[in-house]
Structure formats: C-alpha cells, structure tokens
Length: 317
Image 1 (cartoon, rainbow, N blue to C red):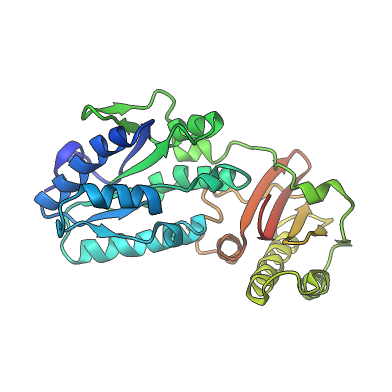
Image 2 (tube, helix red, strand yellow):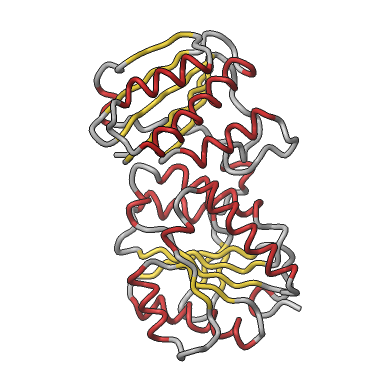
C-alpha cells in the first residue's frame, strides 16, 4: 500500500520543489524522507555535494535513507533513465509498494544543455509510470534561471511546498505534447565560423573516418570513439529513414567537436526518441538512443524541409 500524498495514486507521482532557502528545502525533504523510512519504503537521496550534505547532516544517523551519487546518476538523460528504471525494477522485485527519491540537477545543466534535460524531466513522466515511484526534483530559485523554472512548471505535474502542500502546476504539459514542440537549436559558439569539413551523402564509413581525422588528439580517446559511434548511427539513420541530401558538417574547438547531420526528412515520429529505446524496437530508434548515451549533448530540430541532429563531444558551451 502506498503512503503519503501518493497514497491513492497509480504509477509515477512526480513533484518539483522550488525553494529559496536551505530551511525551505529541509522543510519539504525531511518529512518526505523520514515518512518513507517509517513506512518501510525504499528511500533515496540523489542530491549534489552541498545539498546532499545538508540533508545528511539534518537526518538522524543511521535512519535508513540511502544515498545515490547524484553527479554519476545525472551524467546524461538517456543514461539516467536507464539507471533509474533498473533501480526501480529491482526495488519492486524485492517487494516495494512505493519508492521515494529526492534528486536535483546541477546548475551547469541549466545552461547550454538544458534543452535535453528539460526533455528528460518531461519524458520521465512516461518512462517511470510503470513503477510506484514518488519523487521530488529540487530547484533552488536563487540559482535557477527563470526560463528553466518555466520549463520545470511545464514538466512537473505538481509542486511540494514547505507547509506540506502538494499543489498542481497550472502550466503542466503532458509529455506527448511537450516533447513534440519544436525548439531551435542554440548554436555553439564555434559554429559561428565555417565548418572544419562538410560532406554530402557520406557513407557511415566516410563519416567515421572524418571524425577521427578532425579530432587531431584534442579529446580523450573514449570521447572520440563514442562520437564516432554516434555519428555513424546518425548518418545511417539519415540515409535509411530520411530524404536526400544528407549533409554532415563538423566544427572543432580546443575542448569539443560539434557535428551537425541534416537530411530532408521529417525526423522521428516518436516523442521519446533518443531518451527511450523505440517502442517498436526499430533499429533507427535504437541508434538514436545509443547516440544520446554517447555524446555530451544532443539537440534536434525540425524545419519544413528537413530534420537536423546536432552532436557534441567534449564540453558544450
């Protein structure tokens, strides 16, 4: 039997916390965590170093709350979904009737890569709905840009408040709608100049070779190998499922490589493309999912005459 605010809820009970003081954060989080422990529910914290330490010091020693490495969990959206689904499945298999988690994204994620973390916050409303999960996502309004808070209100069905309230979000938008909204790709600064190379209708082999040539030892070998896999999958999908011409452009910087692949097709129809494996098991959907786990940032954009996927390895700016 589920307890607390999610007692009568089926599936994922997803909340955000907007706080502007440590006291307000603790006023929401401590009852949430201790209530889970008291009810015998698996209860986890996936916060950053400062906020995680704050919560840990405020909880009774040995209280039963478990801690996840927040930075590792939230390395990339598709990887976070995969890891959390595995954790949730393990807890349910062990007999859990409800799982509680409080987590947060770090402030650097509110910058150049926020678009795919906003997609993550929306997609998990579907991705975790197979499980009796009650989670709270903490956002410090002192550090979070207003545009990010606007997306938070659209991707979380409700807010948890310091006075014990659970308030519906007035701008909540179901993921099938939110994820289909088309947003322009914010150009990386190095895209202001001409590309290092440009290929039209390359084979996957030619695309892989181009990435290796362009890197010139700037990035760690593992990052380059991951980008090569991602570019190969992207070009293959464009050739197989898109419309010609397929145009690959690549820019190199001191700490990153940016690759743009555009074709004349409409792009994937699945709103969860990249964040979850394709529901129908199609190869193209699996390739995009692999791509989302291989790059530092992936952005997508549809235009009337084509679809663009941009991949970054290294440090997005």
